[in-house]
Length: 232
Image (cartoon, rainbow, N blue to C red; front, side, top):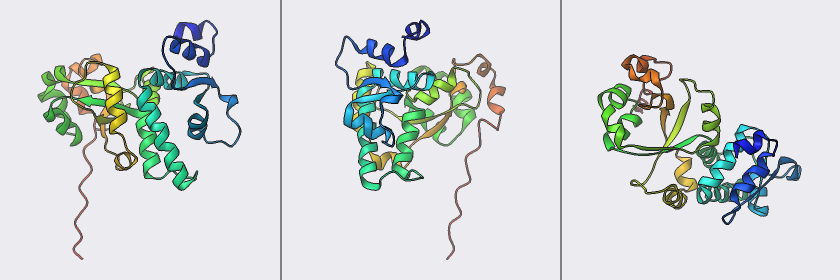
């Protein structure tokens, strides 16, 4: 697909061509086909067409539709349900904020509980140094299209919103089906994410072979102090 775009085809054309052998949950169309004033998610829901601009952001969004059609469809339905309840507001509410974080920046994690607990508590040394060998047991799948776009030019601070996935799957299709069934507006409104500086994943960046890589407190931040209990 990338070669087709570089050769002059539009992102929408290249993505539609990739769908050709299989049923298509959406058709990719140029951004200009969406009527002015219509909400992006509502347009997808009503037309089964995904407005697509030129550039990496929408190209990676299209790849997410190709790899995770059920999850992307579920996110769209949840967005539209929230719009029906609250309308389009200047500031997104908790549910739509969680949906957007997931869509743009999620990664899916399945691995040993000890690693997940260290990730949630931001115990970086335990996560990446003491338990480093356990990363061989981890399945970590990048989903968010904005996350993928950022990683085209890798920087140490790039951080994924990590969502805990089911037991290890045999295919992306299995993971897609499970994720679509698991997602709900209520769950995502609670921001059930752990924060993972992606270049810290063992084997994903040469510099992290040195434990000193993780001493950068501007990236591998300490957990926030727990709120003080009220004495009233």
